[in-house]
Each structure stands twice: as structure tokens, then as C-alpha cells.
Image (cartoon, rainbow, N blue to C red; front, side, top):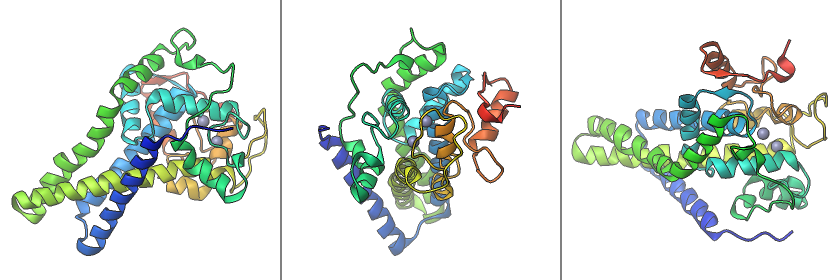
Length: 303
Ligand SMILES: [Zn+2]
Ligand SMILES: [Zn+2]
């Protein structure tokens, strides 16, 4: 099937990869403050938790129902990752589950043979139009179809403000965190600028590139390599696998346990055993205990 090329997305990705490369060259030449590294790691974890707990488990799969404040917070954290608005991300991902490995799946590695298929599933699909199979409706994303009104409201709200949050996700770590630290570490206004530069390149561009490839690897690597999961709950066999490396690449937010996820997509937890690390799991359990989320779907972990 021929999909339209989206040059805006393609060239933005190229430019941000090049800017991340500038950051890495600067690192070799000059080094970064420890505070810049810490800010980068914090931004990675915050945005990846947003994607996994917010976009993925709450807004796409409705694995739990959240209070409005928490749903908004998760949606804002998701926007930091710059992987598309809540409306687009959740729709693309619902297509991925509805048509896994078949025509209609926006990023299946089987779209093309060999390496080309891998690259398509990894990143090339993002700069092509997503085709919607005839008859497929956006049901869960319209208030009249979803029982979770908070979710519907938050998807619309986040989509309206998406770019503001995305830009603030680079500006705040640069100018309000690393800039002031730079002023102390390097001294004066020059130090502030140097700190802000480090923040922008490390906690901004390098962080974006790292988290993009982490998320993309779920669609590419974890659909080709890894441990297959026994098909106890899965209605249709898919190529999804549990991949420890992909989980580590994704800062252990749980997404590498992708075989589990395809096996039981509505389950709020992606790590089902001790070594399948899923840092969103204790967060969801804590939110449930304190009454901030309810109707948590325990899937196969239900006793
Ligand atoms: Zn998948
Ligand atoms: Zn999913």
C-alpha cells in the first residue's frame, strides 16, 4: 500500500538527531555538569513513565480509571516525549493492536522483508501517513463511545496544548534548571548560558533521541527478537516478544515486556514476574491504594 511521505516529520527528526550529535561532540570536547546528566535522566524517566502509564495504559487501553489531576499530569509527561499528540498516539496504537502484523498495522516489521521491514517498524513509519482501514472507527476516542469521560476530556485537552508542553519540556530543563546550576558551577552570565546550552542539548535533544529509539525498539526489536509468551489469553497470534534489552533501553518502565502486553493488552501491568521489571506497576498500585485510580485491570495477575 502506498503511503504519503510526510517531509515535515522526516526533516524534524533528522535535525534533532544532528543536534543530539552536536551535544555528543560537545561532551567529548568539554564534558557536562553532573546536574545536566541528572536532568537528562530525570526527563527520560518522567517522559517514558508518561508514555507507558499515560498514553499507553490509561489513554489507549483503559487499563485503569484515573482522577482528572493524575490523568492530566500523565498526559503532560507524555507530551514531553514528542511522539505525537494524545489523539494521534492513542489512535495509531489502537490500530497496532487491532491489526497486529497485518495490513492496517501502522508499524509491522513484516511490511517489507528483512532490514527494510525492521527500519519501517522502527522509525520509517513515523514519517509516512498512517492509513486507516475502511470501516475502522475511532470509537474509544469519542465521548459518546468511551465510558471514561475523564480520559476523553484529557485526550482533547492535551491535544489542544500538546506543542506548548513539548516546547516547555525542553525550555524548563534548559533555562530554569541547568542554566542556574551553570551560573553556580561555571560562574556569571556566561556560566548561565553554558548551563542552559548543556540542558538544551543533553536534557533536550539527546534525551529525545534516546527515548524515541527506546519506544521505536518496542515496535521493531520486540516484534522480532526475544522470548515468546505462551498464548493463554491472546486471541490472535502476534510477533510480539518479551525483550529484556528493549525494557532496559526504555528505562525499565515495563514496555520491553511486549509479548505479555499483546497477550493481555488491557492488563495494567506489563511485568508479570519478578524479573520482568515494570516501574509503572508499583506506581499504579500506589495510586490505587491512595484512591487516585480505580478499576485497575489485573489481567492474568488476578487471584
Ligand atoms: Zn506491538
Ligand atoms: Zn498496547
